[in-house]
Image (cartoon, rainbow, N blue to C red; front, side, top):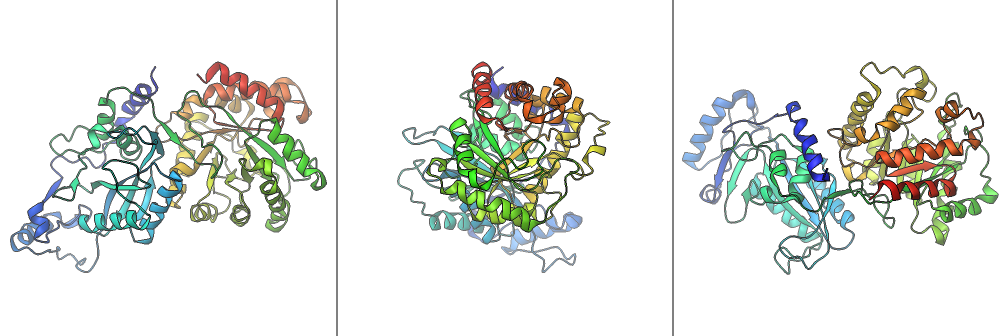
Length: 528
């Protein structure tokens, strides 16, 4: 089945969950004449308890050319409106430009509450230019629509936007798609944006945020997802997840993508399979062997999360991890290698990023340190959100999933994605991990591997890349009868092949050279 068609059918099947905020006849129009008179209707979120009074006063204000508010005790309070802003660009560091625009919106009081994934698309209209990245930001703003437009155009100008050709190349493009339930029509602004129904690069990210919202008051039954479903089939789009400034991004919706290998560099003396193996005096040769073996990411760990292992202090963990990060960054052969740090501590994560790390691989998805998600959001790193319950010491007693392990893992990861969004982490900075071996039985680990494709397509998780870490784990030993973790190479190879078939984007492994061969063969079979 065509990729776009299958995703549309999935989204259509999920529609009964929603229809929130769809109100027939709820939209209001602001015309050129009203704008010229300085009249802006109060946003739909204002003072809903006194909607009747507000509507009466609105009519009076339109008649007098003044703005009025209902007398409900909120006269001096400013109301906020939810708006949806299109993000795009095809010049320079495209992700960085979009992130700069989002950060600038936040600085100006246009609060970015959620973002879609970024989708890579061919240019429309003017086709002789580079591919675009496009996304949508959900924002909360106190600004009326025209003032919001002024601020967005000011941001474009401050970021160096120069319009040479209409719909031509640009480093940043910010457009108001929706502003509450308002309809706006004047010489500068039309809302809902007139291009929404025909542009997949708008509908695709918009459908991630509000698939069940109506955008045309004359057709309140027709939702954002319906407009996307109605588009003719074309080249399948893929989301893009940034892992570093120089490494190739993850493109989880590209069927022919190559699997990325994350090499495990444990610097702990008590890791379950390679504790104490990587001595500081020989670290450079170990790192080079990983890179030459096919690793594109190196995951540095200074705290064992295996069951029953003692917890070390943050200072000790930093002392193990930070020199290794600096060493990797100093090796010329590693210039395009992404560095991941396996930590659940915000302080370690921030120091590691300051020294050159790109990814924070948090086994708790931010639950073991309340500062982790806000810190990652503030410093702009990519994070891997892994599913786990409890702590490494208690997780073995928390593997009861009455509703089934796949629905439970999906639901709990959805909650962590929402927490990450609330902390300011952009969706294009997230990677998911089902957490094999963490609060799972051997049978549950096998089921997750078997049904990984279902997790990838779960409503709300679509478009996000997945990391799978099955290497040498106890369930492999239980199935194969191999007690020595270091000898579980063949069993691990089978799990790597299964992960590729299920759609994993990143494979976290100990035996890099061997698993690179397994991944290459698996890619040749399934990634076409």
